[in-house]
Length: 339
Ligand SMILES: [Zn+2]
Image (cartoon, rainbow, N blue to C red):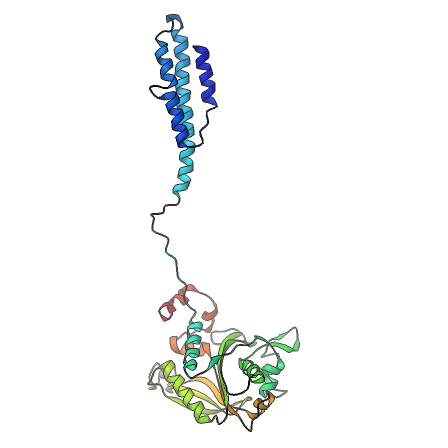
């Protein structure tokens, strides 16, 4: 009988189970009432009295070893199952933070949508440009200060490769390749060599509009401006035009709108004038049309351009320009409702 117990002990030592069912089968085989160990317990009665002590010791050892081995295997399965328990399909999911649209993107879209309603379509161009598209085609004189290294980022000191200082270069690209009527709006990032402060940055964003056709007049420009101002800042908004100078338009003007904070009464924001400047505009200089291969005796056009940061500032009173590029979530989240 001792030999049989030893054989069983050996069997139990090498016992393996691939899954919980196999383990249960083993438990039944050895430990159930009809199992091998119970059978041995029954036979124990027939063991000679002088051997009972020794056989009993082996039998207990076998019983204990079997129980331990089965527990050990069971624990192995339990651990695997605990691993699976990490995925609790009934648990509420983690909240997913939705991003917000950047305030500049919100305002850019609004500007483009307003001009879209006037029939303008979006045109885009490269940010790395050449002298012709940024300056020469647009009537900038050879000695114009904008061509200076102080104001423009040149690439590898090559005076013909530079970062565009305005989106007017897109207008040139479109006029060179398309026949009038041209009615485009050009949003984009521009670069100027300026020290970064709360009111200046080395890059910012512009939107320019260009309309070239037969018989386009200053009155058309003024109507487009009035429409834009009312759509953007509300139906009560008034506009005024002041004569100005730009190389690429003649005549040129700057447009003010009645201060949207005080309604024109005068406040600190509008320096108590009741007006705030928002954009530059004018009739496209005939030289610019000719430079782009458009007959200035047949066609006329108007152009206007504005800084998106400036308009965003007016709409949302962002006092520090640098906040637009800092990606501070606390700042950006404030525009959630404007999305
Ligand atoms: Zn004001």
